[in-house]
Image (cartoon, helix red, strand yellow):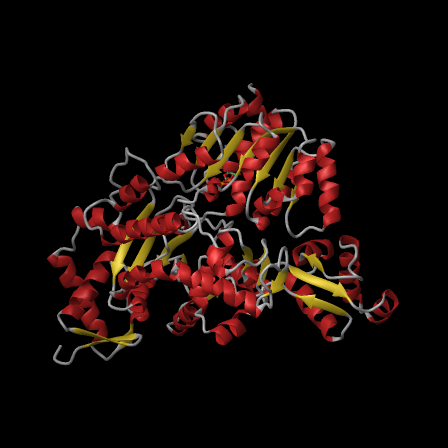
Length: 632
Ligand code: ADP
């Protein structure tokens, strides 16, 4: 048996490689720079983990999501493979220990978040490490033309300089042909070398439903399908409101967005995972790393910013291979709103300059000051004082961030900070056993905590103590209330760090790749999404895959366009039958759409029939209810 296969069997117990896994493994295994395009769930991890185990030295894995990083490290450790991670939640001492261990070959894998790559400590230690190859996960983040550009990814070029002979394995689940080229260029590939797995999902029916009002369209869908469902919205408030509305209509629904506290997020997510709540109404903060195979329906009531995001979110339906649908519900306003997004995301540069100046005033930084200064940023107070709109302000801060003037950490991304204000004796004199457990874990992890604020990671403390994140959060809040500690939880206070001394606003520079090009790219992506929504001729599956550069795609036969072409539209006879059933149910007065008996009716036909009856004014929608128009 060959080495790769025996490693796969030994550590994972799988019989063989899947799809293009072996191609990628052999390519990187032979020392060639390699780009692998695989859809989520395609089995990317194996493609770097197996060859890394077959080669001497340690594999450096660059990946942006701390939560996923920790999961992977744990998964490797549980298989008896030595792995560690370095991210912003660790103290300096902890980082130092891990990096020193790497120099002494203690691990086969070191996971690192891209922000850490620029730290001098890391770059110094890296020179002494024996690195087999470098894996860049979510590699599209290195492209300014791509939908999720992260400046910290450009730092990978530095790493390459220090390790010029280490091949790179870049992996991503979303890349258009243009992005595919840019990834290889920005990662300095010695030659082009791409392996692509088809993104075709034969069980997934893509649809676009044009409805008078979003909620009506949504209700029709929820009634027409059974099983677990995700409804994506863009806005936190709308997310909560919609979930409440659905509960009023008799569905079991919960919601999730980045503004929730940790404990609450977990509870809501679990309720949905277990199936006690059928519907998860969520913003795009939900879904990464969640593997629920039996989602039957994903609905978008607001459009995302790109086909890339749509495809990722839509793809969370039907992971089990059984029939599933991903539907966009659009009312007339949706496309109009889409047009306004460009200005919201890319405000004029004069405005961005003004924001910079206002922020400096607000944080009391004089021209020439501010290098490496981090301040809390009370966004609401700032908006009121300087008359800014939060949404456009956030875009301006993001542009300043991408241009390298500041680091802007939105509330949910920040890291908590803690300082113990009591003396050791005072502290341990008054703690109950739970407090004590938490504080001991804190002291073990974080040195210097009696002297000054240190960044802490409640997740680590949760792992150390076995207590839930919420319990820890509440406990720390209580200790802070008693004046024993100062605790600045993450989530609540955005932070701004100045990476350069304050300059005059006229001196700010915004290179082409940071502003103009990204604005063009953003518009390009929105247009592609608009075309997808308005399309009535091309198979939707084919359209999506062509966007990602797949050429040989046959018609799916199950999207709304294909269905309309062959079996349907709905026949006269089918319509009459549905109409009769609806009329007979409404004979005795209005009923909720959610209460209609629609067993056996195809969703497409039901939608069409209800629309048609409304258009003919036989049917009237009245809030959650529908009723027959008088005279029918
Ligand atoms: P991705 O990172 O591409 O989303 P993962 O690496 O998490 O995907 O793999 C998805 C799932 O597929 C995991 O449960 C993994 O164990 C499984 N898997 C990967 N490769 C194989 C294989 N060759 N045989 C069987 N299962 C596999």
